[in-house]
Image (cartoon, rainbow, N blue to C red; front, side, top):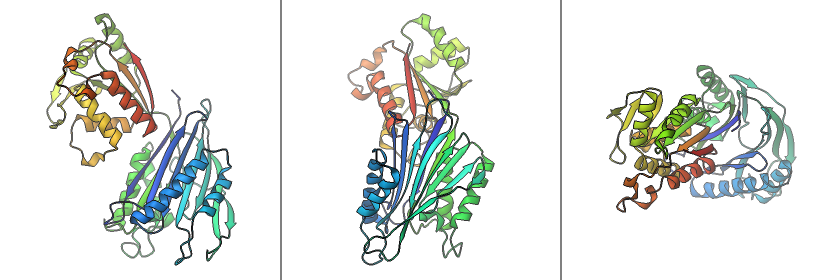
Amino acid sequence: MNNVFIDVDYAQIYKHGQKIGGDVFLLSRNPDNNQIVATLSDGLGSGVKANVLASLTAHMAHKLSFSPINLNNSARIIMDTLPVCKERKISYSTFTIADIRYKDSNTDIEVNLVEYDNPPSLRFSGSSAVKWNRVKTELQREGAFKKEIVSSSQFKLSIGDRLVMFSDGVTQSGLGKSLPLGWRIDGVREFIRKEIENDEDISSRELSRAIVQKANSLDGLCSKDDITCVVVYIRRPRRTLIVTGPPFTKEADEALGEKIKAFDGRKIVSGGTTAQIVSRVLGKKLSIDMKCWSKDVPPSSKMEGIDLVTEGMLTLSQVATILEKKMNLSDLPNDPAKKFVEILLDSDQVHFIVGTKINEAHQDPNIPVEIGIRRTIIGRLRKALEEIYLKETSQEYL
């Protein structure tokens, strides 16, 4: 696993009263050439129509970014393809594309950024705002009442640097309400600076959520537009170890204990038998935590030196479902599955140690098939973490 991690996440609130957003964010990784593409598009208006227009733009930008075509030329193709609104004489959709390239042996991350009609993105080194040059290209399309400007730039990000992209729902929040001219770019920049000063290692998920929640509060918790924010953060990876299932032989128990003690990061033990083994080899007391449970999963336990101790198959299956369906954590009960997911989402690299001893209880035909085989559930977890959340995962058997 790499010693540099590119943490990309976003937060979004729909326009008040809408059940679908007109802002669309797409994120994909191409591991073959160490490329990540993040695309934010804002469709004209709100609701279903805006979502269709933004989705069309975002998917087109995404496809072109992974093609051999130069990103500036890709922007021209998108602009030529996008229709112009006959009434307002403006484009049906805006976009910001960040094409991020990295090398395994290099801590400098190369970014190619193209922006059209979204608020200008912001860069930070630590809590200090960074200015950089953009090349502006004017395009005159038939039907448009003005020349349209596409901005492009290339720069490098190092550990501790951030790139923040957002839709105009952020900069225009509070307009005519708490702020006569809206939050504006200067207000957003100052807010981000203070957030990073308060927590210099704030994750992309936490920072994007803070920005969106602040914008929504400026609108009086009644957002007048879709509010979306994307954060790219270059940092050292946050690692999590997940231990599930007893080792194949009792002789391997001590080796498991050594691996847990040597691991630098957060630690989760999943499974009652596994927890008892870890408690014995580490010499740590195991106790049940009745404050953390729900009707869906059994309660968690406490053990010194372990961040979370849960029941095995039921909890793992529930965690996999939450990740696969991208459930909103705020809608979930305060149970071990939610805490499990919170740790995973705050991690960059997840390593699984999977015990290979068969637990006869899990071969009961009355237990659902999807929780019957430990390896299947771990496969679901790894697939969701890698493909949906762009986490790095690894696995070993014991």
